[in-house]
Image (cartoon, rainbow, N blue to C red; front, side):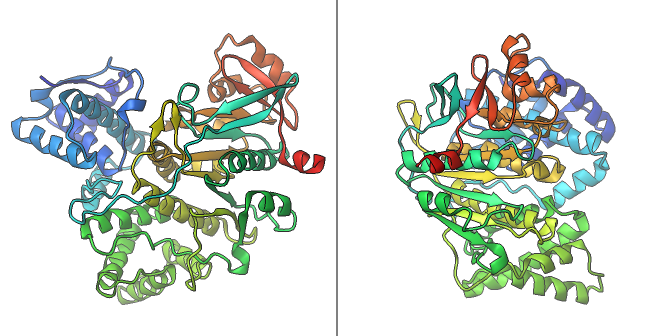
Length: 515
């Protein structure tokens, strides 16, 4: 018989939400939470799930599901995971999605103080989009996308400790079960140069097989200053301010399968909404415009552009006598940056995306998230990357500078959390750069739980022991950490494997100068 227990924290959450909604029993909120987790496209890899906390609220199978609804939910899970689950897998997945859904609902209703009825109604309006996110739809019989993968071990030299190299084997699962990297360091600490060195090493070791994309939202990159790096890594410098972003972020959306299309349109809409202050009504307006646009696209077989959405949104607002708002403003800001003459090959080549400093922050953030959403859908349409022995094959590297902008944004952070969780099974590595360690530890989610390697460069607040320990994964009794922090300075960093180590950072510009 199915028996599920939440984690300890969610024991109180179940009681809180049941009373908030005035439900007759605690099984109702549990079923809603499971469905909500599925709707938000959260996905778990059971091979990567560690020990589970089963000390919370217990649900017996006959209480959680009746005989009819259990079959329905199990069918949804089988479809969602494209697999017929065993009883053990079914039990684990129900528990994981129950905890995930409860946490997400509690965050919205208690932490963000959203009206609980509005949350439920908005979720119902969105509908349960329960098609598998990897796009292997039976309706279309679409083959998984094939993107070449690098099956070589990638061992990154971070720097030196007393002359000895400090290396991280990012795709060797004996040493690292998660390829994502988090870097924290204040302005001038050398984050950008450090990442350039990591990308150079990845390019060299993979013989150019493992491609990358680097987002520079500060507009500091200039092709002449980057010449050595661009040449060494065979990287395309894409200067958005000069109209070089010939890319359509809608080009991945399916034009045949309507169900799959709805999921992908929802992802596009949420990417827009996540970095802009759009309410339920604005999201509904955008959804309606997108629905009408894609009806025509299915007929003519051509993907719409951002300019198409801008124009149709203007017409929609005029017909409905709605005043222009921040939703129309964001499309006004970004429509001219995406060119239609040809599509650049984002994932087939190395790209450095240079966004102008004069661009409105909301526009540059939206452009980055639209490209991230595109890449997520592209790589989630691939099969899981293969493992040969302990070496996990790698397909792509994404570098997100100024990531604190998204980590501190509740809506954007939810999408970023899903991106980190989902995309790693496809062999995609994400490198996040922020100015402080506290950015990773949000009250609604601890991003360090999704990071394999954390590297601390020079930071302003070296006394923030609680967050620094959590960021590095250091033990409370790590005696070397205090000593390392005292000596932390520009071009130095701290990493913790078994204990904290102070390292002289390996910088790309030094390598070029020495050559």
